[in-house]
Length: 531
Image 1 (cartoon, rainbow, N blue to C red):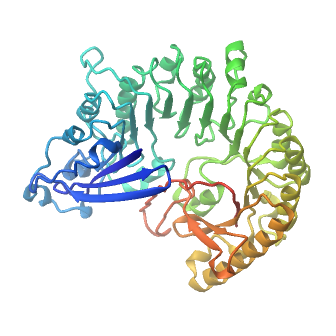
Image 2: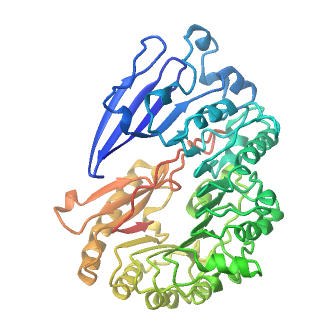
Image 3: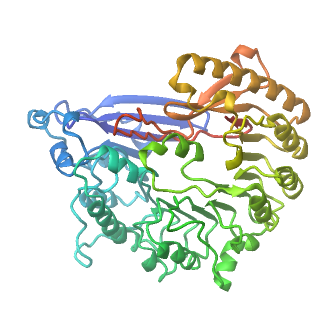
């Protein structure tokens, strides 16, 4: 069976381009592109129409002049008269008439936000059960939703995602002129309340920003079908963190929990657990848990059981990105776990079936004990991601990082390990080398040799390992350089961009930040090193 994803792109009001990708048996793919506009009247070919399942709109609903008035766009980025000279699009949503089997809608590049009429149009088609709004389409200046009781709209979605960029507060301060962040946040809260509070009986997957999600209202109702719950954004009040466990206690079917929320000085390492039988029962059935800067004493780790197969104790935003762009005045904090704290947490996690683990910590004298415990407690691990940073006392010291010892220890102790990600904070490929072409060339060569030598050594120790990668620091952010144990040395590596590792700050002399997301590539069967 063919499954087709179709994108509708329009950087200017006239232009709409369909790009349909159809895959058969998940192995082969076919891409079809054509133009669709009110001028030419082009239509998608009939042969692909029954197979389109996902429709992606990369179009703006708000005029550029209005975006400028609200501070979302700089005036120099567009021509004031361009819209007056350009014919208008056909009414939004006519595309669905061509695709009777469409199930999912994604809005990208909808600067200013997705208006209510567009959401209503999507839901007029009974097959649509998923709506996703990405970080370039957040509600900044669209009209507010109709008052409660006025709109007959009832969301029947199984999947809803609204995920602002993790750096959006910093972006607002540096790229948007005359931008009222509080007004935009209020608009976002109104829209999310109008959508989310109609979903309890149907939604199965939900992604929301913690600062504007209606958490108190969500804690007052049950979510019987919700299996995947993700919170992103940044804490703006301690009450938000205290409400999270009350919300989780109303989700009896929950299997995957992600709390990837940036922390501040006012809200640091909040406790996620609650002293209730309902909360304990829900945590016991979780299969995937992702927490940012967890509290070492959080009771949630005592409640995890052998149902757990994926655990991530991570940072957000990434520590090395925070270091690099500290000049921009990021308000979030990074209270990393020490190796001792990380060990104390993992000793309380009883999850012998754990297959994927990510940890982020500052090195101390218990580092070897931590790595040995991982090998003993989680023998079925297939993927291990270790972000190891120097302790504050060693930041200015030229201390050699024992990367061979670390890699050999885990490769030897985990016979089923397929993927190993290591952020070792090695200085000979410093994060600032991208500013100097000659230094970057030298660092690239060092990393290439180290990666090839390491994959050769570890593949002899552990036959399950399939490839090694180094996450190299570039001007745009981190990039994985993947090395393979077989083949000619000059052909044994490739690259891809992880989503949250990708960021671009043109220079410390400008006020512009341009943070660009990239879909996280599939990471199966690899060792990855981050320098």
